[in-house]
Length: 447
Image 1 (cartoon, helix red, strand yellow):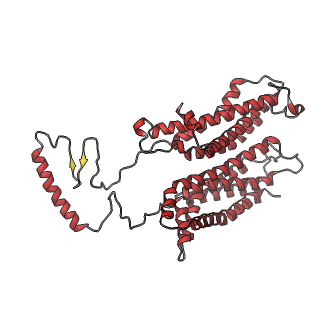
Image 2 (image 1 turned 135 degrees about the vertical axis):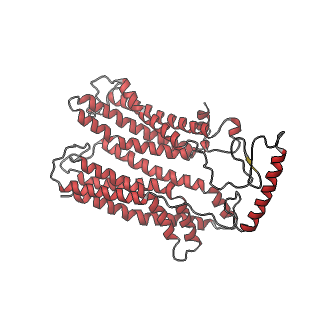
């Protein structure tokens, strides 16, 4: 009930994102139902049905990724001060986010089922004069348990993924314990940094208290003489010193290695003369499993290396005596390297894979079928929408910084120019990189 109330009272932009999630879930559910229909009309070729089902994993993964990105930017599930007092702690908000995502995906799955039944002719007469009967299985009764099981994949996987991503994480205590903080169940660290155990102020604790205070005074005096200029380990850092930017993402070496391995696998598979063992749907020529594994490794390598490349782009923007504009743009890129880099890497991976897959297109075959077109639109649309949603999340994360800059007198045109500079820098790096990877991936496949 709480999830329904928060869904109803949300901003129109939030409703739009949720409707996009429902649309993506509807498209993925329809593809899964069409795979079931193909398996019903071709009972003598189970391998082809399994291949079509595996072909649907890419739209399913893109839809789940988009649903997680939308749940992260949902303002209704963002922790606020005072919500824990009424029972809306981080765990409850995580459950609300998972429930909202499940509701959106369930709505899309039900729309997919209604549309599929309409095309089959179960609700009305079959449209299109039965042209799509191959993957609709209109002459056979629809197994409802199998259809509901396939339709439940998107809501269940998406809600579980949202719960895992938004689960409450306990803050790790630092190695240096600052003064004035409380640690442990019964212990407290006073201003001098010494621990006062449970019962220290009881019947037998007066002498212990005096000895503790004298030892604390000696240690405090020594600390003030030896480390008066040190600010490490304090709760209130020096406001005049800028915060240290986040460390560079560690996925760049792994992503480069996996990307190189994928290109090597594709090159080796392209030199072999083995007959194709996989017949791809949608007008694509047959290929070998090694080529598909190479495509997969290439996409994973790009996705892993993208955050590190984004961080490197921000560092390069700040090199060679930067001004205020380049310094601001580069620092934001370094801070948002992981949040922006991952969906950007996935977009580049999808673009390079789509370009490389054109080498497998057979001109003698008919054009791409409706299911292949729908799957391509789903994957492309979900990845681009995820990137835009991540940009919205990054803007929300630095809203306080933007407001502080405006209060200090920074012109709004400078902030817009910094955003344009970040976009141009990322496009200048990832555009040629995507084309280069796509050309190298398609080179072994061209005759």
